[in-house]
Amino acid sequence: MNLNKYIEHTLLKQDATKAEVTKLLEEACKYDFLGVCVNPCNVKFAKQYLKDTGNKEVKVVTVIGFPLGQTTTESKILETVDAINSGADEIDMVINGGRLKDGDYDYITEEISKIKAASQNHNLKVIIETDLLTADEIKTACELCIKGGADFVKTSTGFVKNGAGAKVEDVKLMYEIVKDSGLQIKASGGIRDRETAVKMIEAGASRLGTSSGVKIVSSV
Image: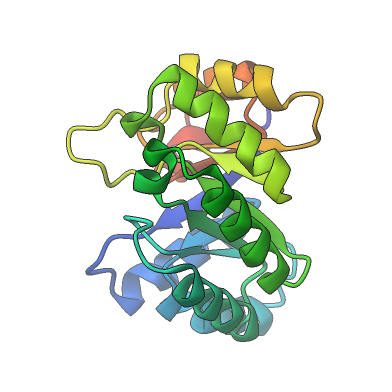
């Protein structure tokens, strides 16, 4: 299985330096990854780097409302517009998990719909943070993503303390909910080796967010 075109090569740590972002971009080009996922402050630099190196295939993905999802819808919209204007190709937005647990489903659906509109037809991935959800809440979150018009539902930020990140059983559950809707799945968080990556794809993921992309595609 050729995994490179599933991988969004990821660097989202809060102290990421320009040198580290540059290395990420170099690796993405070298290994022909589908994309890179960087913090919003690095979007413009990443887009310019790829343009200057003549690489038009690697997508620039960024995160919105990250990692807590507890900012207002209005601020997420502003973040999204700024990211698109800076050159982002895709948006990964964290939902407000508290509102989900409160049962305020209209809020979640409306927020997804508004962020999708602000993304100007670029792919919107909605991070539901599966580590914090029950199976029923995961099902509901997936249903709201469908209703809100998202393009992907994504497992995790990777920032939950002691969290496992993406789990095969959660991806399988998500796939059962979304498989007939056209909504795709991005598994992210804790994917550090080829075996785990393959299991996520077999469970239904069509994208993988990982900082271990080079290790994954280099192993046999």
